Length: 358
Ligand code: IPM
Ligand code: MG
Image (cartoon, rainbow, N blue to C red; front, side):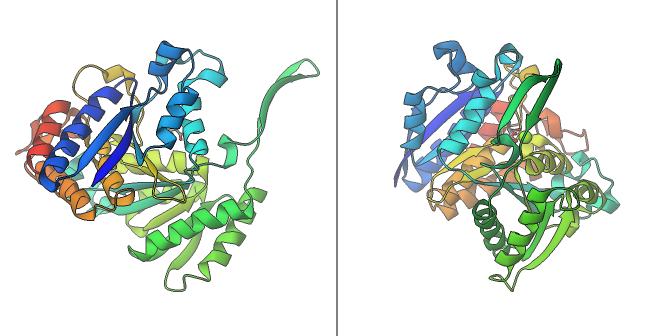
Protein backbone atom coordinates (compact mmCIF):
# COMPACT_ATOMS: atom_id res chain seq x y z
CA UNK A 1 0.00 0.00 0.00
CA UNK A 2 1.03 3.58 -0.54
CA UNK A 3 0.10 6.20 2.05
CA UNK A 4 0.64 9.94 2.36
CA UNK A 5 1.62 11.13 5.80
CA UNK A 6 1.71 14.78 6.79
CA UNK A 7 4.72 15.01 9.06
CA UNK A 8 4.94 17.62 11.80
CA UNK A 9 8.24 17.58 13.67
CA UNK A 10 7.42 20.61 15.79
CA UNK A 11 9.52 21.99 18.61
CA UNK A 12 11.69 20.87 21.52
CA UNK A 13 12.16 17.11 21.44
CA UNK A 14 9.68 16.88 18.53
CA UNK A 15 12.27 16.37 15.75
CA UNK A 16 14.20 13.79 17.83
CA UNK A 17 11.22 11.56 18.62
CA UNK A 18 9.82 11.85 15.09
CA UNK A 19 13.19 10.70 13.68
CA UNK A 20 12.87 7.50 15.73
CA UNK A 21 9.28 6.89 14.62
CA UNK A 22 10.39 7.25 10.98
CA UNK A 23 13.20 4.79 11.60
CA UNK A 24 10.62 2.26 12.76
CA UNK A 25 8.23 3.06 9.89
CA UNK A 26 11.12 2.63 7.40
CA UNK A 27 11.49 -0.88 8.71
CA UNK A 28 7.76 -1.53 8.31
CA UNK A 29 7.90 -0.31 4.69
CA UNK A 30 10.77 -2.63 3.97
CA UNK A 31 9.38 -5.69 5.68
CA UNK A 32 5.76 -5.41 4.54
CA UNK A 33 6.33 -3.73 1.14
CA UNK A 34 4.49 -0.49 1.79
CA UNK A 35 5.39 3.02 0.69
CA UNK A 36 4.99 5.93 3.06
CA UNK A 37 5.34 9.38 1.49
CA UNK A 38 6.12 12.12 4.00
CA UNK A 39 4.94 15.62 3.39
CA UNK A 40 6.52 18.12 5.80
CA UNK A 41 4.10 20.46 7.54
CA UNK A 42 5.45 23.22 9.78
CA UNK A 43 3.49 23.81 12.95
CA UNK A 44 3.97 25.59 16.26
CA UNK A 45 7.21 27.41 17.00
CA UNK A 46 8.95 26.18 13.86
CA UNK A 47 6.14 27.72 11.78
CA UNK A 48 6.14 30.96 13.79
CA UNK A 49 9.87 31.31 13.16
CA UNK A 50 9.46 30.63 9.43
CA UNK A 51 6.13 32.32 8.66
CA UNK A 52 5.13 34.35 11.77
CA UNK A 53 2.01 32.19 12.23
CA UNK A 54 1.81 28.78 13.97
CA UNK A 55 0.19 27.09 10.93
CA UNK A 56 -0.21 28.51 7.44
CA UNK A 57 -3.35 27.83 5.37
CA UNK A 58 -1.16 26.04 2.88
CA UNK A 59 0.22 23.70 5.51
CA UNK A 60 -3.24 23.11 6.96
CA UNK A 61 -4.36 22.04 3.49
CA UNK A 62 -1.42 19.65 3.20
CA UNK A 63 -2.52 18.04 6.47
CA UNK A 64 -6.14 17.92 5.32
CA UNK A 65 -5.21 16.15 2.10
CA UNK A 66 -3.05 13.53 3.78
CA UNK A 67 -4.10 10.02 4.82
CA UNK A 68 -2.85 10.74 8.34
CA UNK A 69 -0.87 13.28 10.33
CA UNK A 70 2.07 12.17 12.44
CA UNK A 71 3.41 14.77 14.83
CA UNK A 72 6.10 15.30 17.43
CA UNK A 73 5.20 18.11 19.83
CA UNK A 74 4.74 21.86 19.68
CA UNK A 75 5.51 24.81 21.92
CA UNK A 76 8.31 26.07 24.13
CA UNK A 77 9.41 29.04 26.25
CA UNK A 78 10.61 30.94 23.19
CA UNK A 79 7.00 31.40 22.04
CA UNK A 80 5.31 31.56 25.45
CA UNK A 81 4.79 35.30 25.53
CA UNK A 82 3.13 35.66 22.16
CA UNK A 83 -0.49 36.79 21.96
CA UNK A 84 -2.95 33.88 22.37
CA UNK A 85 -3.93 34.03 18.70
CA UNK A 86 -0.51 33.02 17.42
CA UNK A 87 0.72 30.71 20.16
CA UNK A 88 1.89 27.25 19.02
CA UNK A 89 -0.98 25.53 20.91
CA UNK A 90 -3.46 27.55 18.89
CA UNK A 91 -2.32 25.74 15.74
CA UNK A 92 -2.74 22.33 17.33
CA UNK A 93 -6.28 23.19 18.39
CA UNK A 94 -7.05 24.63 14.95
CA UNK A 95 -5.72 21.51 13.27
CA UNK A 96 -7.79 19.20 15.48
CA UNK A 97 -10.91 21.30 14.98
CA UNK A 98 -10.31 21.93 11.27
CA UNK A 99 -9.96 18.22 10.56
CA UNK A 100 -12.90 17.36 12.82
CA UNK A 101 -10.82 15.14 15.11
CA UNK A 102 -13.37 14.84 17.89
CA UNK A 103 -12.24 11.51 19.35
CA UNK A 104 -8.95 11.34 21.20
CA UNK A 105 -7.90 7.86 22.28
CA UNK A 106 -5.15 7.70 24.89
CA UNK A 107 -4.15 4.25 26.07
CA UNK A 108 -2.53 4.18 29.50
CA UNK A 109 -1.00 0.76 29.71
CA UNK A 110 1.51 -0.33 32.31
CA UNK A 111 4.08 -2.77 31.05
CA UNK A 112 4.92 -5.23 33.79
CA UNK A 113 8.62 -4.52 33.06
CA UNK A 114 8.08 -0.90 34.07
CA UNK A 115 6.58 -1.64 37.46
CA UNK A 116 9.48 0.07 39.18
CA UNK A 117 8.97 3.24 37.20
CA UNK A 118 5.33 3.42 38.35
CA UNK A 119 5.01 5.77 41.32
CA UNK A 120 2.33 3.55 42.91
CA UNK A 121 3.35 0.77 45.27
CA UNK A 122 3.06 -2.74 43.83
CA UNK A 123 0.07 -3.66 45.97
CA UNK A 124 -1.88 -0.84 44.30
CA UNK A 125 -0.66 -1.13 40.71
CA UNK A 126 -1.07 -4.90 40.70
CA UNK A 127 0.33 -6.72 37.67
CA UNK A 128 -0.19 -3.70 35.49
CA UNK A 129 -3.29 -1.92 34.26
CA UNK A 130 -4.74 -1.10 30.91
CA UNK A 131 -6.96 1.97 30.67
CA UNK A 132 -8.19 3.62 27.48
CA UNK A 133 -9.07 7.27 27.90
CA UNK A 134 -11.58 8.47 25.31
CA UNK A 135 -11.40 12.24 25.42
CA UNK A 136 -13.74 14.54 23.50
CA UNK A 137 -11.41 16.81 21.55
CA UNK A 138 -13.22 19.51 19.62
CA UNK A 139 -15.69 20.96 22.12
CA UNK A 140 -15.98 22.16 25.67
CA UNK A 141 -13.91 24.87 27.32
CA UNK A 142 -11.20 24.77 24.68
CA UNK A 143 -13.53 26.01 21.98
CA UNK A 144 -16.22 27.96 23.82
CA UNK A 145 -16.56 31.71 23.76
CA UNK A 146 -14.01 33.49 25.93
CA UNK A 147 -12.95 37.02 26.65
CA UNK A 148 -10.92 39.23 28.92
CA UNK A 149 -12.30 42.66 29.69
CA UNK A 150 -12.62 45.30 32.36
CA UNK A 151 -15.75 45.34 34.45
CA UNK A 152 -16.09 48.43 36.59
CA UNK A 153 -12.37 48.93 36.20
CA UNK A 154 -11.56 45.36 37.30
CA UNK A 155 -9.86 42.95 34.90
CA UNK A 156 -12.21 40.02 34.33
CA UNK A 157 -12.04 36.92 32.14
CA UNK A 158 -14.33 34.05 31.27
CA UNK A 159 -14.35 30.82 29.25
CA UNK A 160 -17.48 28.86 28.38
CA UNK A 161 -17.99 25.11 28.50
CA UNK A 162 -20.53 24.21 25.84
CA UNK A 163 -21.61 20.81 24.53
CA UNK A 164 -24.60 19.88 22.45
CA UNK A 165 -26.19 16.45 22.55
CA UNK A 166 -24.83 15.46 19.13
CA UNK A 167 -21.24 16.11 20.20
CA UNK A 168 -21.78 14.02 23.32
CA UNK A 169 -23.54 11.22 21.44
CA UNK A 170 -20.79 10.72 18.85
CA UNK A 171 -17.96 10.55 21.40
CA UNK A 172 -20.03 8.26 23.63
CA UNK A 173 -20.46 5.88 20.68
CA UNK A 174 -16.70 5.79 20.19
CA UNK A 175 -16.24 4.92 23.87
CA UNK A 176 -18.83 2.14 23.85
CA UNK A 177 -17.59 0.59 20.64
CA UNK A 178 -14.02 0.78 21.96
CA UNK A 179 -15.10 -0.92 25.19
CA UNK A 180 -16.82 -3.65 23.21
CA UNK A 181 -13.43 -4.68 21.81
CA UNK A 182 -11.89 -4.63 25.29
CA UNK A 183 -13.24 -5.51 28.74
CA UNK A 184 -16.70 -4.03 28.09
CA UNK A 185 -16.75 -1.37 30.76
CA UNK A 186 -17.21 2.39 30.34
CA UNK A 187 -16.70 4.88 33.17
CA UNK A 188 -18.19 8.19 32.11
CA UNK A 189 -16.52 11.03 33.97
CA UNK A 190 -18.26 14.35 34.58
CA UNK A 191 -19.05 16.95 37.22
CA UNK A 192 -22.82 16.48 37.15
CA UNK A 193 -23.20 17.59 40.77
CA UNK A 194 -22.35 21.13 39.63
CA UNK A 195 -22.32 21.66 35.86
CA UNK A 196 -25.25 21.75 33.44
CA UNK A 197 -23.00 20.59 30.61
CA UNK A 198 -22.18 17.51 32.72
CA UNK A 199 -25.83 16.79 33.43
CA UNK A 200 -26.54 16.80 29.70
CA UNK A 201 -23.42 14.66 29.22
CA UNK A 202 -24.71 12.08 31.67
CA UNK A 203 -28.20 12.00 30.18
CA UNK A 204 -26.96 11.49 26.61
CA UNK A 205 -24.34 8.90 27.60
CA UNK A 206 -27.08 6.86 29.31
CA UNK A 207 -29.22 7.06 26.17
CA UNK A 208 -26.33 5.81 24.02
CA UNK A 209 -25.67 3.01 26.52
CA UNK A 210 -29.07 1.50 25.67
CA UNK A 211 -27.63 0.48 22.29
CA UNK A 212 -24.75 -1.33 23.99
CA UNK A 213 -26.42 -3.61 26.54
CA UNK A 214 -23.31 -5.82 26.63
CA UNK A 215 -21.20 -2.91 27.93
CA UNK A 216 -21.35 -1.93 31.59
CA UNK A 217 -21.65 1.80 32.27
CA UNK A 218 -20.94 3.69 35.43
CA UNK A 219 -20.71 7.41 36.13
CA UNK A 220 -17.95 8.98 38.16
CA UNK A 221 -17.36 12.56 39.23
CA UNK A 222 -14.09 13.93 37.92
CA UNK A 223 -12.60 14.71 41.33
CA UNK A 224 -13.35 11.19 42.48
CA UNK A 225 -11.87 9.81 39.25
CA UNK A 226 -8.61 11.66 39.86
CA UNK A 227 -8.48 9.93 43.23
CA UNK A 228 -9.61 6.49 42.02
CA UNK A 229 -6.88 6.47 39.37
CA UNK A 230 -4.22 6.43 42.04
CA UNK A 231 -6.23 4.34 44.50
CA UNK A 232 -7.15 1.50 42.18
CA UNK A 233 -6.30 1.99 38.49
CA UNK A 234 -7.29 -1.60 37.75
CA UNK A 235 -10.99 -0.79 38.12
CA UNK A 236 -10.98 1.11 34.80
CA UNK A 237 -11.34 -0.16 31.27
CA UNK A 238 -12.55 2.79 29.15
CA UNK A 239 -12.79 6.27 30.65
CA UNK A 240 -15.09 8.54 28.63
CA UNK A 241 -14.83 12.24 29.32
CA UNK A 242 -14.97 15.78 27.97
CA UNK A 243 -12.07 17.75 26.60
CA UNK A 244 -10.46 19.40 29.61
CA UNK A 245 -11.15 16.62 32.12
CA UNK A 246 -9.58 14.25 29.58
CA UNK A 247 -6.53 16.47 29.19
CA UNK A 248 -5.92 16.44 32.93
CA UNK A 249 -6.78 12.80 33.64
CA UNK A 250 -4.66 11.55 30.74
CA UNK A 251 -1.55 13.23 32.14
CA UNK A 252 -2.29 11.63 35.50
CA UNK A 253 -2.88 8.21 33.96
CA UNK A 254 0.27 8.45 31.87
CA UNK A 255 2.41 8.96 34.93
CA UNK A 256 0.97 5.78 36.43
CA UNK A 257 2.39 3.85 33.49
CA UNK A 258 5.85 4.93 34.59
CA UNK A 259 6.41 7.97 32.40
CA UNK A 260 4.46 10.38 30.26
CA UNK A 261 6.99 9.34 27.62
CA UNK A 262 5.03 6.11 27.17
CA UNK A 263 1.57 7.48 26.37
CA UNK A 264 0.60 7.44 22.69
CA UNK A 265 -2.53 8.98 21.25
CA UNK A 266 -4.80 8.95 18.23
CA UNK A 267 -7.21 11.74 17.35
CA UNK A 268 -9.87 10.53 14.96
CA UNK A 269 -12.64 12.04 12.87
CA UNK A 270 -15.59 10.41 11.10
CA UNK A 271 -13.32 9.12 8.31
CA UNK A 272 -10.23 6.97 8.71
CA UNK A 273 -7.98 10.03 8.89
CA UNK A 274 -6.23 10.72 12.19
CA UNK A 275 -3.65 12.85 13.98
CA UNK A 276 -1.12 10.72 15.82
CA UNK A 277 0.97 12.26 18.54
CA UNK A 278 2.28 11.39 21.95
CA UNK A 279 0.35 12.88 24.86
CA UNK A 280 3.41 14.61 26.24
CA UNK A 281 4.69 18.04 25.35
CA UNK A 282 7.83 19.31 23.65
CA UNK A 283 9.98 19.04 26.81
CA UNK A 284 12.25 21.99 25.95
CA UNK A 285 14.44 21.28 29.00
CA UNK A 286 15.76 18.06 27.47
CA UNK A 287 15.59 19.03 23.79
CA UNK A 288 18.68 18.31 21.69
CA UNK A 289 20.22 16.03 24.32
CA UNK A 290 19.19 12.74 22.72
CA UNK A 291 17.68 11.52 26.01
CA UNK A 292 13.95 11.79 25.28
CA UNK A 293 11.80 8.67 25.28
CA UNK A 294 10.59 8.07 21.70
CA UNK A 295 8.24 5.20 22.66
CA UNK A 296 5.05 7.30 22.90
CA UNK A 297 5.60 8.58 19.36
CA UNK A 298 6.56 5.14 18.05
CA UNK A 299 3.41 3.68 19.61
CA UNK A 300 1.41 6.56 18.09
CA UNK A 301 2.80 5.53 14.70
CA UNK A 302 1.53 2.01 15.46
CA UNK A 303 -1.92 3.48 16.15
CA UNK A 304 -1.71 5.26 12.79
CA UNK A 305 -1.06 1.97 11.02
CA UNK A 306 -3.97 0.34 12.82
CA UNK A 307 -6.62 3.06 12.68
CA UNK A 308 -5.87 4.99 9.49
CA UNK A 309 -4.21 2.38 7.27
CA UNK A 310 -5.92 -0.77 8.52
CA UNK A 311 -2.50 -2.42 8.93
CA UNK A 312 -3.17 -4.41 12.09
CA UNK A 313 -0.34 -6.91 11.68
CA UNK A 314 2.17 -4.13 11.12
CA UNK A 315 0.89 -2.21 14.16
CA UNK A 316 1.21 -5.34 16.24
CA UNK A 317 4.77 -5.82 14.97
CA UNK A 318 5.69 -2.40 16.38
CA UNK A 319 4.01 -3.07 19.72
CA UNK A 320 5.68 -6.40 20.11
CA UNK A 321 9.07 -4.90 19.20
CA UNK A 322 8.55 -2.33 21.99
CA UNK A 323 7.69 -5.21 24.33
CA UNK A 324 10.80 -7.15 23.38
CA UNK A 325 13.07 -4.15 23.83
CA UNK A 326 11.61 -3.33 27.25
CA UNK A 327 12.00 -6.98 28.27
CA UNK A 328 15.66 -6.82 27.21
CA UNK A 329 16.17 -4.14 29.88
CA UNK A 330 16.76 -1.13 27.60
CA UNK A 331 15.48 2.08 29.21
CA UNK A 332 15.60 5.73 28.35
CA UNK A 333 16.42 8.00 31.28
CA UNK A 334 12.78 8.65 32.26
CA UNK A 335 12.02 4.94 32.80
CA UNK A 336 15.43 3.83 34.05
CA UNK A 337 15.29 2.57 37.62
CA UNK A 338 18.81 1.11 37.88
CA UNK A 339 17.40 -2.32 38.68
CA UNK A 340 19.55 -5.36 37.84
CA UNK A 341 19.25 -6.19 34.14
CA UNK A 342 18.38 -2.65 33.10
CA UNK A 343 20.65 -0.49 31.00
CA UNK A 344 20.25 3.10 29.95
CA UNK A 345 19.98 4.00 26.28
CA UNK A 346 19.63 7.26 24.38
CA UNK A 347 16.62 8.31 22.35
CA UNK A 348 18.21 7.22 19.07
CA UNK A 349 19.46 3.94 20.53
CA UNK A 350 15.93 3.15 21.70
CA UNK A 351 14.69 3.80 18.14
CA UNK A 352 17.46 1.57 16.70
CA UNK A 353 16.58 -1.26 19.06
CA UNK A 354 12.86 -1.11 18.31
CA UNK A 355 13.48 -0.93 14.54
CA UNK A 356 15.87 -3.86 14.76
CA UNK A 357 13.18 -5.96 16.44
CA UNK A 358 10.57 -5.45 13.70
C1 IPM B 1 -2.51 17.59 25.02
C2 IPM B 1 -1.93 18.97 25.24
C3 IPM B 1 -2.76 19.98 24.47
C4 IPM B 1 -4.17 19.88 24.98
C5 IPM B 1 -2.25 21.42 24.54
C6 IPM B 1 -0.84 21.55 24.03
C7 IPM B 1 -3.15 22.38 23.82
O1 IPM B 1 -1.88 19.25 26.59
O2 IPM B 1 -2.56 17.15 23.85
O3 IPM B 1 -2.90 16.96 25.99
O4 IPM B 1 -4.48 20.40 26.04
O5 IPM B 1 -4.97 19.23 24.31
MG1 MG C 1 -2.34 17.59 27.84
